[in-house]
Each structure stands twice: as C-alpha cells, then as structure tokens.
Length: 250
Length: 250
Image 1 (cartoon, rainbow over the protein chains, first blue to last red):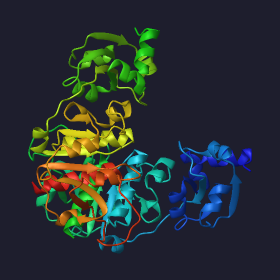
Image 2 (tube, chains in turn yellow, blue):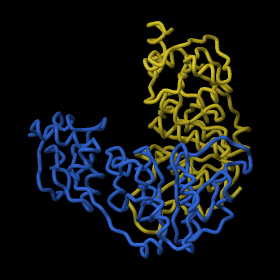
Image 3 (cartoon, rainbow over the protein chains, first blue to last red):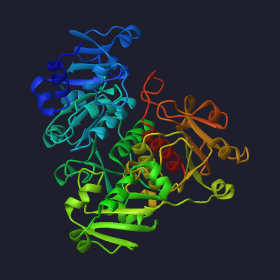
C-alpha cells in the first residue's frame, strides 16, 4: 500500500533538486533494479506481489507491496515491469595514479540524459571503469540516464569534476585524446591503452579551453574517406567508435 | 496566420494512420527542413517572419507565416527554431543488381523511432545509401525518427520490405552478415565491401527465421575479450561499430 506521502516522495526524485537534497535516486525494471542493488544501497523497494514471487530477494530497508495501478502512479515508464526502487547515490574517490594506469573517458557538457546513459553502457561494454563528467553535464542520476545505462551504472564509476582542473592534474606524458574535424584519422593514429578520451558537447563539441589540454587530435573518418560532409555523428555513436578502436588495438 | 483546420491537419501528421492516408510527413528545424527540401517535395512551409528573413528560400506549394506562439501549437519540439514543413513521402525502387554491388543495411523490427533515426544517420556517415526495413520496424516518417536523422533522410533511401523475401532474392554468393553472441570476432573476420548487414530487434535480436538466411555470423567483442557478460549494446551503437569496421577495412 502506497501512501500519498510516499507517492509524492518517490515522484519527487524525478527532480534533480530533490535528488540533491535527499541523496537518493530511482530506477525501474527487473534487470536495472537487480543490477543496481549489487552496487547501491536500496532504501525502498516498491513491487507487485507477482514480481516478488518470481524474482530473487533484494535487500532493502523498506519493502512496499503494491498493485499494478499503484505502481503506475510513480512510474516514468510506458510499460511496467512490476518494480521500482529508491537507491542511495554514491560518490567515488579517484587518484591520478589509478587514472594514469588505464583508459578513461571524460565528458564535456554532454547534456542529453539519454546520451549520458548510452555512454555509460558503452564504457561498461569496453571495460572502461571511470567516466569524468564536467560540472555542466547531464545528471547521472536523472531517471532517463539511469534507465539508458541498462544497469551499467552498477559497474562504471561516474565522477563529477572541474574538467580543466582534472585534465591539468596529469603530467604531459599522459595522452589526452579528443575528436575534431581536422584531427588525424583514428585508424592511422597510435592509440595508447592508458589515457583519457575526451568527448564534447552534442552541439558544440570540445570547447577551446579544453581543446588546449588535448594532446592527440583524432578524426573518425566518414566514407568514402575525404568526402566533404557537413554531417556529424551522435556523441554516443562517436564514443562507441572511438572506444571500439582503442580496444580493438589493445 | 494558421487556421484551426491547418493546425489539426499538421498536428495529425504525428499519427501514422494520417501519414499513411495523406502520404505526407512533418519535419522541424532549420537544418532538417533545409536538408529534406533537397530530396522531398515541400507542400507546406510554416515559418516565422524572422526565420524567413534570415534563411535561404525553400520551394513550397504553400507558405504560411506565423508567430512563435502559433508555431508552438503544431510543434513536437521543446525549443522552436522558427520553421516546420510538411513534405511528401517517397517510395524508392531498388534492384537486386544495384544492391549486389554495394554495402547495405537491413533492419529486422527495430522498433524505437529514435534508434531508427540514429541508424539512418550512421548509414549516411558511412556512405551506405540503402536501408531495408522489415514490415514491423518503426515508421521512418515518425517525427521522432525524422528528427533523429538530422537530415540524413535526404540522402539515405529507406525501403520497407518483407525481410525474408528480400534476403532470399540474392544468390548464395552474396554475403549476409549478422551479429550473434556466438559469432566470430568481427576484427578477425573477412568483411566484403559488398553485402548486406542485418541488425536485429532491440530486445530479441535477429529472429530464427532470418538467422537461417545469415551466411556470416559476427560478434562485436566486449573488453577484456572473452570476459563473460550478460550485457548488450544498444542497436544504434552496435550498427555504428559494425559499419565502422566494414569501412575501416575497405
């Protein structure tokens, strides 16, 4: 049974302000909730009896059994899967030493929550464990981002940083990659298994300020190569192509 | 000035049924409308005076000048760019001979309009001029699809076909590629510059019926390679990685 207060509380978590105040976020659906429960503390699990009877137990501070209709009142999704959970947000620590020893992603102002979620899923697929987001990026705990990660958020650590300070924290021997229209064909470039790949904003790409900190300018060639184009790739698609090429090499 | 009838007519084009009845579709925004006007006949151009004063003329049967407020009434977008157009749908012909001489995409029941639009944009980037969609795929003229193509719809021909009949129309020498969890690592596979790449449904992948017609079973490896994973890639991302690898080779 879901009280009016509880409905208000859980629905409120769709708003960033309320997520920031409470330090909580919501996730919907069997795979997502199950995956996230391995990494995040579950405070409230809202589920139908049918869901509870057919799925493994999830540790939670509070369990609320509801009907399909009640679940519908707090859902952001078109189709219900019988479960919604409230999790506690996490903040991760990182060190320059750790970052220096692997491949990392940095995002400058990626603003579409769905794109951010897709990128987290791509990072998970390609074994990239840390993503560093500029302060004006989409909120990683936006329900649209969380849903788009398809559970990858349980395995990829997303950090919010001042991107200029972050990139400046490394010695000049640390390669920082970025994609530009006048960059060097990625397929002919040397790619290190350790470094930072910077992806820019959906409309503006990488800013001039951050561009100065990029040491390796790459280009994802279109086809036929060299054919002039005013076109661009979606930032999620570009991230996949870049990460895929790094991992193909190494 | 936008009459009530016109508002009803244009808004109605968000519905597939009305698009099918009229043979028309809508597009919003400067780049999209401009790009599409090079390939599709424009029947109605609805624009603000400011937009008309600052953009090149677009040939249209009917021009309606409106205020921002009027435009808002027929818009599906959060932010207005001053222009919405009604275009006439196109049906393209194709021949097995043409298809046999280049790289093509075939989609089985890709159902999310945004994913379909993203895939059309990817095809455009990688110089793939024809996409063959199964009959239960998303509608290419859904406003969400059209918007997600970012104008690529002007350059990529999307055909609706019975996918089984389509794939069966080619001799067994024509390579048909598909991705499967037990496929061969794409990076170690031979890839022809001529053939058909089949991408499957978001949840179910490629059906058993279509799988029988796939001659080359590929796998996009995750990283580290061989690490067991229950994860998957979004169909747009997977399409980009596959097309990118074909074009890198050739």
